[in-house]
Image 1 (tube, rainbow, N blue to C red):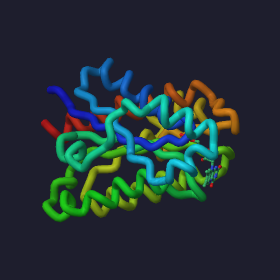
Image 2 (image 1 turned 90 degrees about the vertical axis):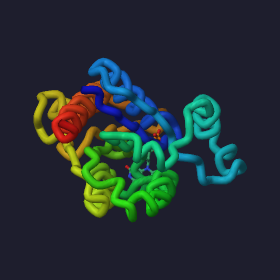
Image 3 (image 1 turned 180 degrees about the vertical axis):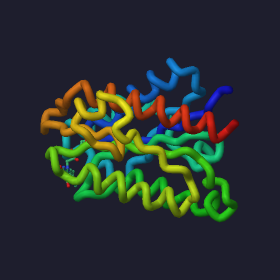
Image 4 (image 1 turned 60 degrees about the horizontal axis):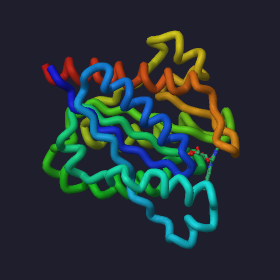
Amino acid sequence: MTVKLAIIYYSQTGTNYRMARAAEDAAIKHRAEVRLVRAAEVASKETVASNPAWEAHAKETEDVPLAVPEDLEWADAILFGTPTRFGSPAAQLRQFIDSTGKLWAKGKLADKAVSAFTSAQNPHGGQEATLLNLYTTFYHWGAVVVTPGYTDPVIFQAGGNPYGASATVTEDGKFDDLVLDAVKVQTKRLLDIAERLKA
Ligand SMILES: Cc1cc2nc3c(=O)[nH]c(=O)nc-3n(C[C@H](O)[C@H](O)[C@H](O)COP(=O)(O)O)c2cc1C
């Protein structure tokens, strides 16, 4: 049975983009049908241009399609990715999520298998709070939240976050590659659960 996975992310400087691509690799390997889409920028052009890393990443990913609510309706499984902003998801991803009211009202978001990953600059910079914050929305949708738990040794090796893969990223964008392995494990688990739900 082919599972349809939407990977919906926002990334200012590339960390969550790399995590999203790792998820896409894992999903293709496990024969899922994948849409990798990004949440639209909400900051002004001037604000983006004031930060060279932000501007460069925006340019590098301008060909990645923008997320639309239909991606959620299409998907059996949804994986979100966002930087941690003061212990919460980025406004860009939140803006997309807040555009899903019509789907929610029609019950179209219920029973989807959903999970999320994040990154922050500090090891205790709010990664878990960001994921739990996102998961609160998914409970309102009636979605089935799928977490990695400690179902694979790589979760411990990558920092031990059972709520979802999370990177601790330096100011120059470096983080442990094991986090990408944790994203892959999380993606496979999400697909497995989605397949069982679909069956
Ligand atoms: C407005 C703002 C708020 C942030 N808040 C936090 C925070 O609460 N904790 C933390 O460790 N890092 C924080 N950061 C750092 C980001 O989480 C980090 O730059 C991001 O994870 C990089 O992801 P990206 O490369 O995908 O954009 C913040 C950055 C910005 C710009």
